[in-house]
Amino acid sequence: MPNNENLNSEAVNIEAARPEQTVLLGLDYGVKKMGMALGNTVTQDARPFDILAMNNGQPADWDNLLGIIDTWKIGRVVVGLPLNMDGSSSMIAKRAHKFARRLAHRLMEQRIDVPVQLFDERLTSVEAREMAWELGLIKNERDPIDDISACLLLQSYLANPDHAEDIATYKAD
Image 1 (tube, one colour):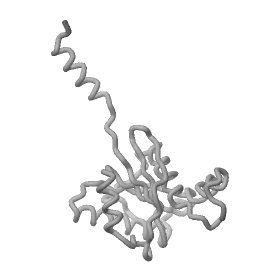
Image 2: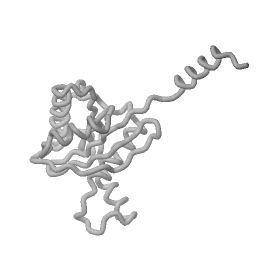
Image 3: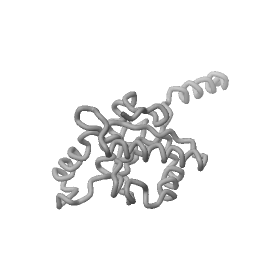
Image 4: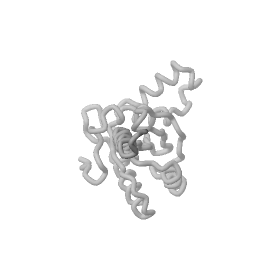
């Protein structure tokens, strides 16, 4: 007859060995539209999710964005930081940083405890467009690829999470 004490300790050890899953939301920031992708820290994958309308660099519908974060039980938001090729901060990077700060503030106001991080996203849009052409996902060079860019951003983040910076500690130049 099995010893229940041994079974219980084995169950605890199995639970402890499982990595904790975090659902990520990747945001490819833009002034007119923002790509969104969902990622998973256990499966280490990401997928395009949606494209959000922006109004001069701010979400046209903040409640929609906050609702997505709450509904999908997002554990971390990763905002793409479009730095210049030399690593310096571009004008759009400064706007992305400002957006990320606002998002963190709005999450705090709604008592949604989700960290917001910034992650270098240089060349993700170029890579996303090339990939979308090759896979036949777009038929026209003007077709949106923002959600694919957000997906590539999250895949890079998942491969190098230590390269992300928390919005609270990031210093824009």
